[in-house]
View 1 (tube, rainbow, N blue to C red):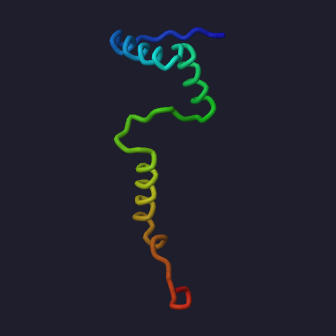
View 2: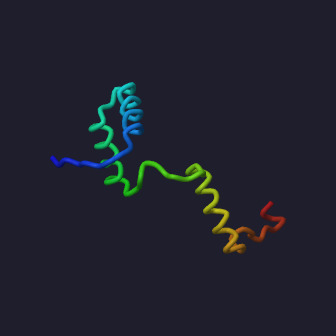
View 3: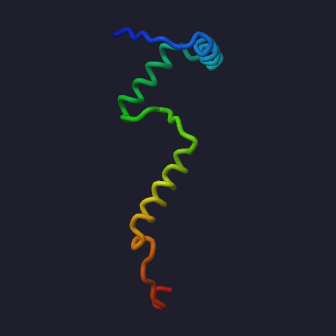
Length: 81
């Protein structure tokens, strides 16, 4: 086992630890779960963004289609309808 130390604002720590306690989660368990998530997925569990993940996916699709308008339109014949 390894020990991890980091500095954080005291008020932020107290508020966060209080919420974790209400949820019945020990800080060590919480941080271990976060590190396991990162190691497993290769992603951060949170994003500092104003967009939801669904909105970000939609925005990426719009950008893709704007960059390649041919993909947006396909030829449709009367037989297709």
